[in-house]
Length: 288
Ligand code: LER
Ligand code: MN
Image (cartoon, rainbow, N blue to C red; front, top):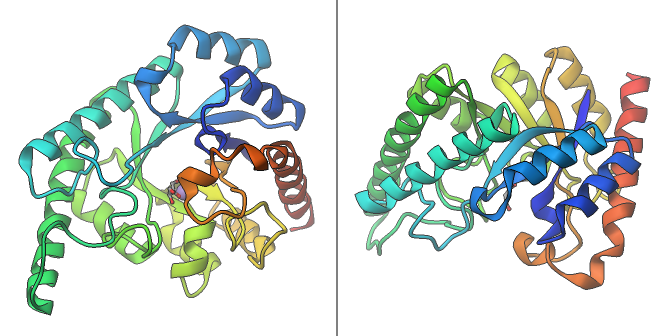
């Protein structure tokens, strides 16, 4: 199994410090935050060579409210900018040798369609419209990704962070409706813990469409801090012959993930979580 850490959980920490941590604890690579304009490609390539690490994935960032990153937005100009952002992420992935980009097809923390609704019917109609807009946007971006040989991996996230795609069934339906070779599925153990009846069963359902996985425990902290059954998860990944990476995304105990990522008072957890997560997951790998 390949292991990485998604560097958005370290706020604006310098890349060198992140790469040093990854190397120290035996990781194979990094998942880079999808902010192409914040990086210098030459620096990333140099750090990968120096530390013997790979960029294994790009985590697209879609913070709500946004006029730039909402692929499902009713405003066509907003959607156009969101597709442009994804194309920039594809170019960035090519520049740093990353095989895939994570896509959340509506913005993160957008828990209702855009607008005000007087009735259930209006809400349902608006949600369906945004589903279709998201399909159209992801299909457009997928045509470019397919041509460039990069994958887009759709991430279902929990109901408190999106109304659009919360679980593996909805994720698989979305992937099938886009119907592109370049569009696959990503799963996250933290979100699955909220939305799935059985996370291991969800992994089995995803099967060969699963190309990337985020790891955090049930309380979004490091492996072993919550009640997620990682043994069952590792066994399910083995059963489906999972070939992707496990990208760690554990956060300090603070409700808003983007604030949690930046709080200096929890910085001491960065090394500790990095060390514990890979050690515990490797142990499960050995035992199953
Ligand atoms: C992103 O990978 C994710 O899991 C979202 O919940 C961002 O907070
Ligand atoms: Mn995630």
